[in-house]
Amino acid sequence: MSTVFFHRLIPSNALRDIGPEDTPRVTTMELFFDLVYVFTIIQLSHYLLTHASWLGALEAATLYAAVWWAWNYTAWAANWVNPDHPSGRGLMIVLMGCALLMAVAAPQAFGARAGLFAAAYVAMALIRAGYMAFVFRGQVMGRNYAQLGAWSAVSGLFWLAGALVEEARLALWIVAVLIDYAGPYAGFWVPGKGATPMASWPLKGLHLFERNQLIFIIALGESILLLGGFLVSHDLHADTWLAALVGFLLIVSLWWIYFVDLSEPGEHRFKHAADHTSLARAGLAYAHGIAVCGAIVVAVAIEMIVAHPGDAIHAETAIIAFAGPSLFLLGCTVFHRVTAERLRAAYLVSVAALAAWTWGALELHLTGLWLGAGVLAILAATAAIGHRKAG
Image (tube, rainbow, N blue to C red; front, side, top):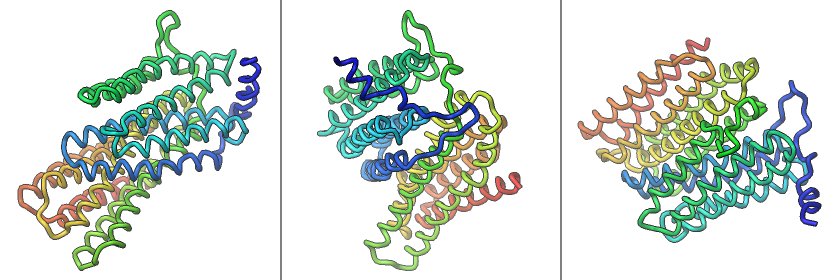
């Protein structure tokens, strides 16, 4: 009876019906799912704003790692499952609900809502893996997802244990993150079953690349929301306008580097490469995770600079102003290395320049406006160099 029920609930025809040379289109259901991450990214940036310390940064990074992995695995699943099929649509809605609960719990994830955050994340992981294993029943991909689910179950024990043991929460959750992120490189190895070769995951890379571009746009949107929200609710003086202009141009610089400098070679590589899965694992799951994280931290830096444009900066502001653009550029460096198969040295030089400038600004007790202007100059130069090389 239960078998018949699951066959009706998760029919095999819920998979996308596409040819070997076709690329799945991004559906409105996938875009609807991403709406949760508008709220989620706001929650994460606010968490870092209100916990601007080394411990707060580590906690925020742990929460982000979970949020990113939940989105990443769902984007991969939608590469095969048809989100417009009633069954696939139902899966996306359930996962969307779990992601919303994670976002709601995020501000107090290391406090009163730790259980909600961990339970929602683990439920999302197990439901997704279980659905995919069943919809691919009798196929190699069914075995792949069953082994992925086993890794999710192991990491889930650490997530739930961390929710229960407050004193060891951060340490246990870091272990859980390491397990989750190590899984793909270990091939989701299971005793007695071995690993799942990357060649056995027949991915359509262009679809996933487009999904990652869209989530990056959402991350940039958080900067716009924070900047606009601040300007709406505060008095506007000359230095505030100047700082807001710097913040806006910082957002433009990130967009320019990513979409003008990186997107075309990335798209070209996915169009012509045979092994989309390995490319997507390194260039999207990991590299884009770093770049999106950087964009979120840049939003926090812009908020801090615009809030106090004429005041001498503190160490927290200088560190965040360095960390955001640097994480973004490091993610771009990895992505370019994977897709173009060469190192973009200009990005690494820019990271070094950012370190020198933010340290110097702190030592000289410069204002937030000067700090932001220097960061903007470095990113604008990086964008200009990349555009010239692309041309």
